[in-house]
Image 1 (cartoon, rainbow, N blue to C red):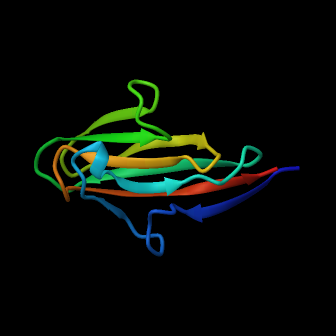
Image 2: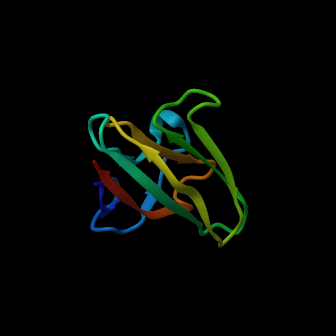
Length: 117
């Protein structure tokens, strides 16, 4: 029987928001590093908040940087909170990273449901 435990995103400090400072994939911030191994899974939930007065493009690298396999691109409207990762699963220590079209305008909030089998 599986056990589910809610955890903060590993890129977060004390469960606080993660500021997206990078504007390139090379400078992207780490949002979460998934559980190691191939037995358990992390179900990842992330919302993005745009504090800018204009729309900002957010690119999330979900476990890699291959186009289009690993990249999720979202245009965030001004001053809105938007769900960008609706419970997608990842494992084997893969990393979720994010970069934005404008630095320091997007903050990410969320959590992970760790599913242990």
